Image (cartoon, rainbow, N blue to C red; front, top):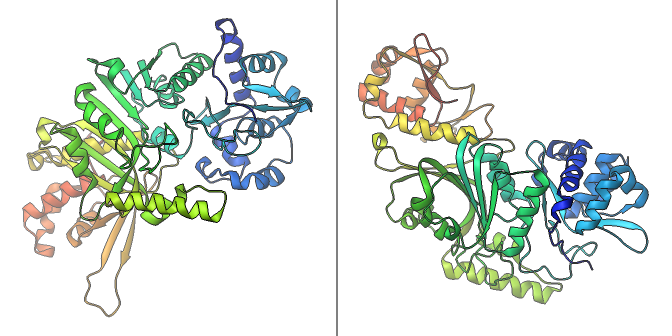
Length: 507
């Protein structure tokens, strides 16, 4: 079995390495093309169990795209003729020299690290997504395995704010994927990891991408940047509540919180006043305890607003079975028992996958607030929607909202799908849910009856005075209607525009 790639390159070979990666991209190898070629709705659906189907049904035509997918993503092997059709001699030679590409005695080529497409045209080297596959791979996954660009990485990448900033920090950087993405819109980026091998991997990617504004630092979380503040902080930390300590990038102690709580606790010292911090993680949930209570405790009273997206929920049993290992029934069942016992000891009844965003609270909208929504994971960029959610919440919390609305129009923020449900023959009142169409985040908002009435009047733009005339229609006081408007603005179901201008709410 081959050992994982060392992620080392001589300075003289950097231009050739950069050219090799660019050439693979020019072969059409990108996230959208891989998704479409393999017949996936989203690239996050990629799974090793489907490898025979991918190869037998989707990659029969061995064009350059199919060859790149097989070699760099599906951990396959190519003949030398196929390598020559995919890579020019200079690219093949530099990949051989760095140890990323190897050729066996039978003349078949394989790679010791995968090249993951993410976003538009970004390509990131990291260890294989399926290191335990018998060919190629390792008999035992090393403790310092660098995390592949997988589900969590893609979800965080899609919700990260992409506005131009002066400085960005990525802690627990791993392959450096989030630092490299930030390098396209930040003047300066720092990437930090405690694993020397992860640091080498990130530096390798920075050289391969030509990211001159990216500095890679080895150290424990914020230690290498002590005293510095950043406009954007991202993190995909070890978060698995594990009864073992087998993988450095994955296991977060028995609670899963050993690393992530230290990251949240460090935000007040390192997040710039107008900055945003975003992390992807999993949190064990106990009945009757909102996860935001834990986040507030870790912040130690720092006045920050918190926006939480719950994108997946796993029962404790599902989680234990999904992480258990074993080559025979007895070993596997013992592993299930260990994982389930650990979750039970923590009081966790479920484990929730979340995307969490933090910003300093605005004095105008104090005290600090938190919002928790459920959404399917985004399949495209949603960073602008996260930014707009913070703006909308602060607008809705304006104590002078009634005066602010004078002389302005209200209308639907976007086309909205309404779902009405009622129980026939029962006394339960009908319920309505509203979802904004065309958004990357598919959040359902339950509406009260008054909210439903007000929303219906916004199908064409309407003034606040016109809305207040509705008071008599459903026996509501003016204050009730204003609170309804707050609620609709907060959830971005409604938008404001001045009489002659553009909408004031970020869309």
